[in-house]
Figure 1 (cartoon, protein in one colour):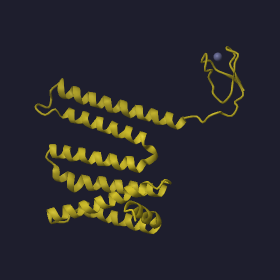
Figure 2 (cartoon, helix red, strand yellow):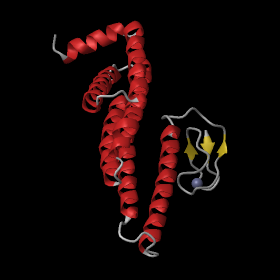
Figure 3 (tube, protein in one colour):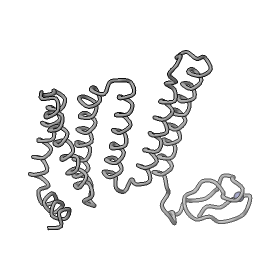
Figure 4 (cartoon, protein in one colour):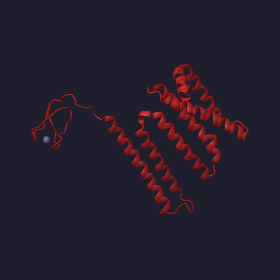
Length: 218
Ligand SMILES: [Zn+2]
């Protein structure tokens, strides 16, 4: 039992500081009555650090752009600010739905893809986005969802993995049929998609079949 030498109260658990007067407690620790939220504390600190860095960077960009007027016509800093807002919304979304990580990540990547398409169209590099950035992004998402299928106990990850499979194969086919030529990044993406499909067909075939039956109401 811990004792506060100033307030003369007994306190159970392993806390070091008196909740009444904030002085150090004396005496032996007893087992805690409730779990300590150390994980949440660590996450919250990381969250605040990244929030600070991002807002500071956005402020620097805004002041460089507007006060010094280095850029002329286009205020590129507004684009930076909208990206910071989008990234923060994404992080909040992931924190709130961490129990279904594959859903949070997949939906976030979808939003990021739409934002990137707008950004690349804006700077006139639409082709770079479609032929290089999107296949890299979606193949990364595929690999992340594949890992989550093996880690996740709830079975939610499989649905998102299958969706990403179809999106990847559909877009590969779409790009191929529109441009009429093979593109190296999409080809690599298709190969990784095929390897991932073989991996779940061998290791997670029951989960995959159950998921497809569930989705198609068979
Ligand atoms: Zn006290």
